[in-house]
Length: 379
Image (cartoon, rainbow, N blue to C red):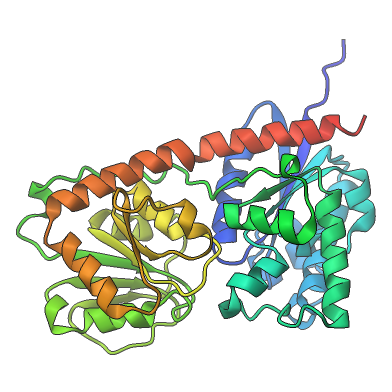
């Protein structure tokens, strides 16, 4: 009797910021499963960083082509290479619609899930810091793009927004029925993000360490935290900035790390030695870094924007801080600096929340189940 073929799924993502981390986490879990096969297409701007065998064979220079066309072309070439190898995909998971906008025939023959951290109109409402091109929604170009995006959303077997705000945009701005949407938040790989033992004794008789993680320094509010770090009140507190474009003075209590990669041991060490995590962001669709901090048992101070509202439980896992309000951030930071028991309690609550709601194992199981349903829908 011939053994039945395993279902083979495609996992393709636009690797911008936190979406790249989500892709890496998700694919690592899905590809380890014995019941299915999976192939990936990580869509980077430059082919050298794509990390897939065919990336060096691209017939064009990605950085010279407009975004959506470039992203779709990279995805198309990856799919063609896999299919030349004899791989037949049963369903696909895409993160961000731009990577398949111009793959109409493949979208029609292979059912797909579509994940997103925001819709174009969501960015127009909430994400001005992203410089999104939908600033004039009544222009002819914007209307055409809207129709194309809407058709892709409606064609998807199921939509997987990262937050409830994005779910609301899908329903109100694009007319997607609620039963075709499941909020799937950023997953954290708890196999790597192991919470260190934190006690009052382990935090005694040493400086407090505050951690900031954000590639885009200004959008993430790094300049605001610099003002706190350079104030006389917090001169004994050490501030650690993980960012590629730090803008601020040098100071004995400011430490900058420009080249740390996600899920690496040096970054994990910073989370282990930190006491408090702060992200005073001005615009965000979600925050993988805040979830990583909670997984490592840290209380989190963050602005209540975008999907961050789904992450923090006010007063239990951390505090929401007011946008562009240095005094409010200082007041909340003072509360945590002066109260070790509060830091520990919030950190423990945060870890429990990640285990329950943001666990990579549980989320990947949910996505695979939906991929199997998508595959079954072909018949």
